[in-house]
Image 1 (tube, rainbow, N blue to C red):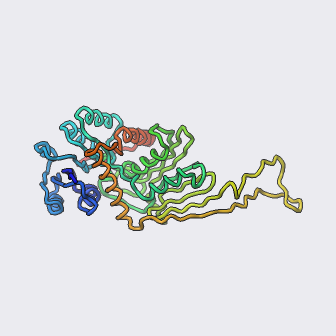
Image 2 (image 1 turned 90 degrees about the vertical axis):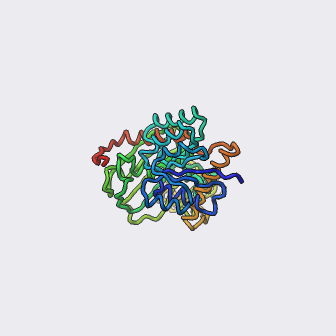
Image 3 (image 1 turned 135 degrees about the horizontal axis):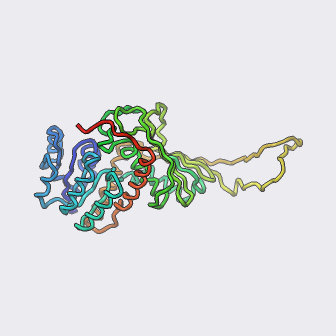
Length: 361
């Protein structure tokens, strides 16, 4: 099998522990890392040890090479746009980490640059490859709990962050860092790139920076579909539930390692006829509506190894990208779709303007 030569820009948590973890793994039979750009000498040394590759302190040194099939842009979030734009203008295929950029205008700049220079350009939204998401979507498409009325997505944990992801000048914050993947999943479930009606809140609860660590949004689509997304850093009782889904015939709870859902059927529990009068007990006294639902409950077991499941997401994304570059398969994560995601993020930020109070050193 032909292997693609890859360069990684940034060997931090994303470049090393997400992209690097896949590229170092047995799952990777498609790529060879030939260069890592990292200005921190200790991390650069780790990259050289991990891959036996060339290392550089400036991404522009890649412009002298002609053997790179695509570049992974895992730099700081505020550097995604200028670095990706420069790479595309120099004819490099680019896989950019999320969040893609600051605005929809910047997203369009990148789309235009990719088109003008005949480059492959995509964004690392890999969460739709999760086992829980694929199975959840399959069950919903089968109407396992009837017509879906409300989807609540949440990331609940207790955290007091103090790293660069808490800084506005770095384009950090709970929405761009945590909720971005969930918003993209919601767009897929909604089946549209339209800008929904949004009610939202961004607040700082526990972090030391000036970017939000709490995020909540209600997204109402023209189809009538309703979604909620929340990132809550103060949930000391977090149970790990990722989605609560409510339908006309039941409900579903989605975890990383299992899905549980409860439902009834119309055959066993037909709808009552409308009664315009007060209800009565057999003895003639007043009564309340009774449903007598015959519930069925199912549990779908998923991969209990969270790190293995996470690795499968990266593997699925990279293998599809390989198929696109080598064999012309349709691109999985189109930049136009992510531009629509940026419109949602920009609207939430417009509703919740935060003041930058920490300057770039």
